[in-house]
Amino acid sequence: MTADDMADKAGHQAQKVKGKVKEKVGRAAGDRSTELEGKKDKTAGSLKKAGDNVKDAAKGR
Image (spheres, rainbow, N blue to C red):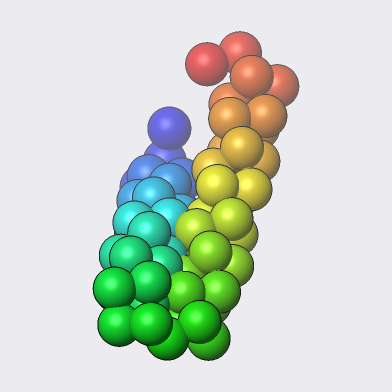
C-alpha cells in the first residue's frame, strides 16, 4: 500500500467522522441544515471507504 493510498483512506475516515460530529451537533442545536450536511458528509465518507475496500480486494489485499 502506498503512502497516497493510506492518506486517501485516512481522509475518507476523517470525512466520515466529521460528518458524524456535524450531524450530532446539528441535532443537539436543533439546526436541521447542519444535521443534514453532517449526514451527507458521513455518507460520502462511507461510500469512499467502500470504494477503497473494493480497490483493495481487486489488488488482493
